Length: 345
Image 1: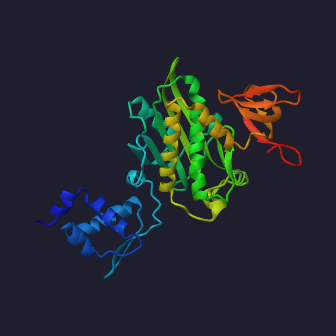
Image 2: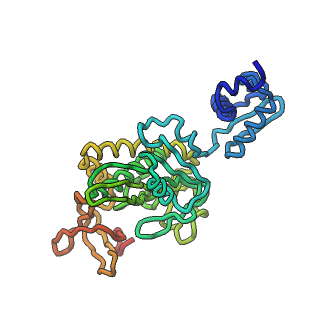
Image 3: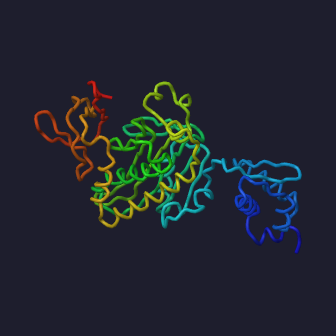
């Protein structure tokens, strides 16, 4: 067998070297051992290792000891996301970019080009990340999870609000698993994820629909993962947080993404099976807004609406009980919770 023949039979050399280094992560593997296993030259192994380093893998090389892959390599490349992903639909195709204007924008473009359901768009950085009601989303490079998922539900447009509920729930569950049960977490209606009362993430669902059919839904999710306090712009520090800021631990992003996709697929299947009320009940049980005295600043210059947030309607509206005893639905607006000492925040 000629040098290089074994590696060619086994597939891409770089991927095989990565697989072997992962088997003994945080331990050195000699270049000679890798070369012998793969029936390639040491130079070929060295080139594969350098290619992996260029992708962002933390691999040290020590004479007479070999190469060592660090478990702190925080990568969200397609191969890292798909490794161990148990979903049936979500994540079959993963589009990765170092920088985009917005993952939702790219996902919608791919949707119009016919991309398959379950396509995931991931980026290290968004230069024009979008939040609800035209707000911007601070998306610094390699500090968070900025992703969008393409869904083709074949359901009535009336069910569109449930996709925001499902996406917020899925993201919350992934955040809870990463943060641990000791960190209070919940959802602020309609789409903010909170840890200890500060915003750690958010959801933006955008739809393309016919009068009686959802053509597709793009569920955009942003989660702050590795930012320290000083990484946030001064205007955001008081109200924004990250998994690192709340736990003191630098968690890897790929496992959080895999958990998010598993949770979202479970909830999405419930919606497709007509189990919308299950999703609404689950969302309501994690919605910190319910039971609180709130003020809602509505769009279009309308007077703010204040009262007690009582329930989530079947159409996704927040139902507010006013001081006069009326129950009024709110479909869009900025919600502030009443402080214990008075005023809203």
